[in-house]
Image 1 (tube, rainbow, N blue to C red):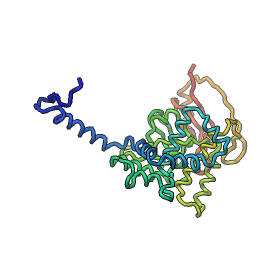
Image 2: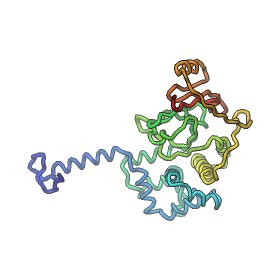
Image 3: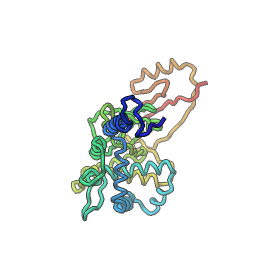
Image 4: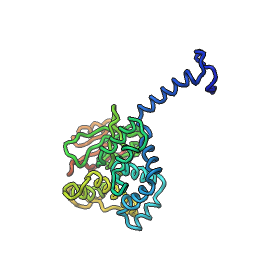
Length: 316
């Protein structure tokens, strides 16, 4: 039953509910809210929409979509709803983490505006989350392992010597595939790592071009704010792929440059134990009876590619 504010407190103290347990409940709720970073991005975007709506719209048109042709822009507007939602998620996260708006006669980083004097009202945990979002660059990762509904093991493709990291990603891991490439930000949540929310799925056939462009940018001494510009280059590359008509790519071997031919065969297995034992004896084969097997080969940029894959289908 709903208790009236002026009703006797059900704890039996003899005080009114509003002067007793209601006050304690609100204090407890506020403590929980103060200890959580939830809602930080939503608060920041709401503040931007309220006080800098026109500047944000100008940024979307001139910066975010600025490198697209008219045809590409029209194609982006017609993508299916799920991809449209991902596009908005990626766009607004980039705006907060790396974007700059023209304000007061000069360009300012959006995060400085949100967290500065007169910015959005935040709890300390929400401020810490946004500060971390600003400090975590968008990077390219190869998925080395997937546990659907749990997380993914990520390998940094552009920074040698960095250990692979296990990242909690319950939603995205249900659709992730081993050896796929994501651009993402990894957030430290105390007892675990997780992705910030924005994910750019980069097709393997376009990866070399993107890597080459990022390498050139990293060596260009005239480019300021390299993390910001690299993230924008990744986003632009991803959007152009979204806008491009679907076509069968000309696949080439990353090590030799020769064209690849894909062949699929179907087999019935009579002795699973013998097959598993034989494949386990091969040093360059990874996998198991549940998830299938891959024969792997190391290629440049410390990446791996699958030479042969055995995928498990219905057993008969």
